[in-house]
Figure (cartoon, rainbow, N blue to C red):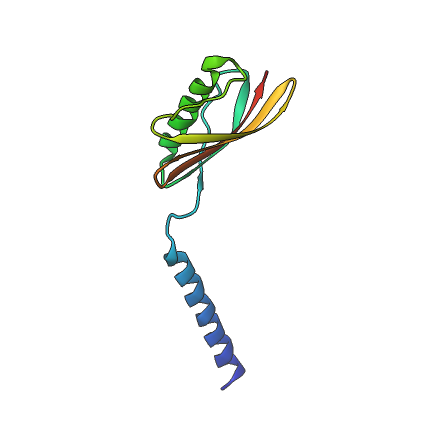
Length: 118
């Protein structure tokens, strides 16, 4: 077999592998979305959704913010939000909160981060 033929076969094999990997799990990865405007003193820094639309992700993000701030600016949300169970991991200093929030409802997942001035 010639060198040229071996290169062609290797290229075809690589393309077949890439095609198989791409077809194996369509839509399974998280998608980045534009975050909504932050209603208070701070900002949402990222928003990702998986098995959900960006519109749903923005709704969940704002609903969680409203739940969280019902008990004050540094409050926490302890109930379901639009049917989602949310968990929050925070890094805080006296003047600021940096957090990552993960909300799940079935297969759908919304993950957002925010920075808030206290």
